[in-house]
Every structure is written in C-alpha cells, then in structure tokens.
Image 1 (cartoon, one colour):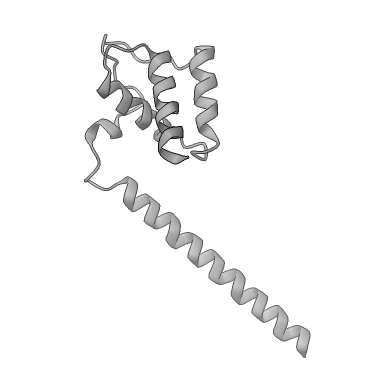
Image 2: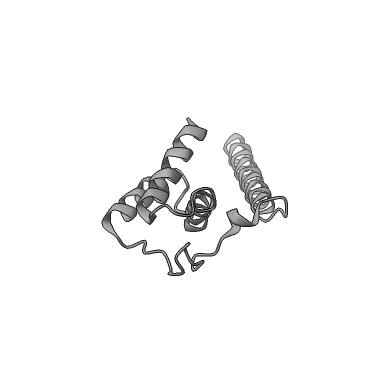
Length: 112
C-alpha cells in the first residue's frame, strides 16, 4: 500500500512538472511574439544586408561565432539572427564577421 502511494505522488509531481514546463514555453512564445519588439529585432533570415546581398553565414569565422551563441541560446537560430540584425541596424556598414562578433560580445555583456 505504501509503495502505491509513493508511485502516485511521483506521477503527480511529474505531471505538475510537465504542466509548469508547458506554461513556461507558452510564456516565452508570447514574449517573443510581442508587438513591443522592434522590427529590427524581427529580421528574417533572408533580409538583405546594407549592400543588397543575403548575408553569408557559411564563412568559417561567422559560423564559429554562431556556434558560440548556439548553446546559450538553446540552438534558436531565429534569436541568433535577431541579435545580428540588431547589430546591423546599429552599424549598417559593418561586415558580417564584425556583426557576428558584435552580437556575441553584446550577448556576453548583457548576460554575464
């Protein structure tokens, strides 16, 4: 009888954990979709750079910087793109490598 109660308690705790996680994920989605965000931060992946071409994210330097951002941003490529887009709006004449580096530096400065 005692082991059955323990099992039910564990099941209840597990269900509560799942429900709490779902609420957290829904809240994160609402924050990301909030209209209060600047349109610069919602830049699409194919947004042209200041010189009219699509950013080349395949260069080894840019890819290395993106990889450094992936773990703390939980591999959310859209967030990485928004960080880079914000830097692009601040310094439109910067190269892609400079934009990636500035995005990483800003993230480190703001989150540590």
